[in-house]
Image (cartoon, rainbow over all chains, first blue to last red; front, side, top):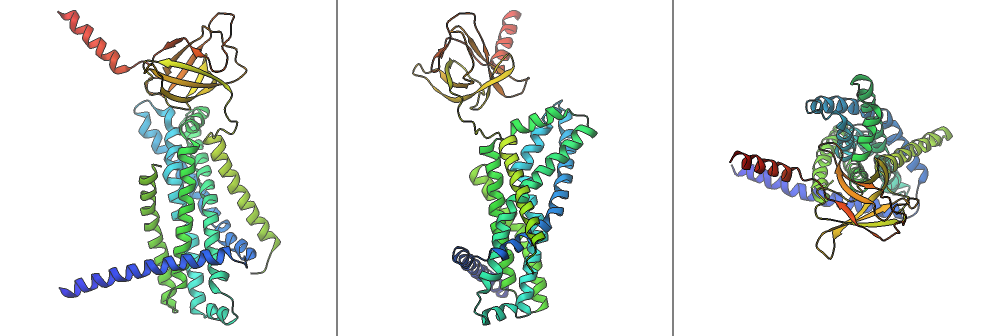
Length: 258
Length: 152
């Protein structure tokens, strides 16, 4: 009985410890980001790994999600004779919620897990210790470019996801369901406002990018230097990252109303 | 990783594509107004504006000529709507304005109807002839009341 409560207490203390460790790590990343050397070449390479290599997944998923959304919205609205609002429904769902959240989840699964695995295996193979030997700060050299690249790539990938989703929905609505293309686009454009919807969309994407970048690099950097540690870092990144994204999404939506 | 010009080019393309998508979403879809206010301002007082919101379109014969800028309460405690219109418009002083609904359940907009006088309205003038928004509940209430009275 007491063992269970002890276990709970231990977990709670460890959780707070990790939270503090995470915050200090974030501070380290910020400090190395604003001070020279800026390592732009490393940043470009990281953007390639995280952004460009995620393009295929993001664009393909975007088009399919848009198509499904168009289909489901049509079936729901046609019963009320409101099928001209398909554009508005699809557009608002994508820009407000599905765009940022789904992009973040896809990128977490693909790029963040790869980042965590890469850094964790660097820990295991003592490459980070080697860097310290050469008096190169491993955070500045390895972690900060990846975290910054994640922060920068997320809004860009989000925009591409939403655009491809619009295209997928348009295709389905016009060619399969017979809606008028002009009505679709007008309804979509009229429903979405820049101030309320688009700003919120990219704000969320930026926050998710920072969150996932921080989590992936932290879990990789602080992993156990064993192969089990690498695998644990990778899976933790995906699991903790996904849940955090959804929780933070709720908090942002509730607090700022978009 | 060796620096590779192809890799750099691809990253540049990616960033460009992302920024283009952001621009499309902000300007075309979001409709951010980068033209600024149009300049020709008119005021209209209403007893009932219904669900009229700022940035609602202002139309003449169905063609959009401006948008609703601000909605406030005038000194006479009636709704005072500020309209921001295309400066090329020439509206006679007896033009009328009405709040209509697009379809049965659509958003509300302002419809302008030009009058026949020779004198034209200038920026900052107040429109004299206004028609309030239709309230469906009031109409139904009126219908029910009249039907009830008919029975007696």
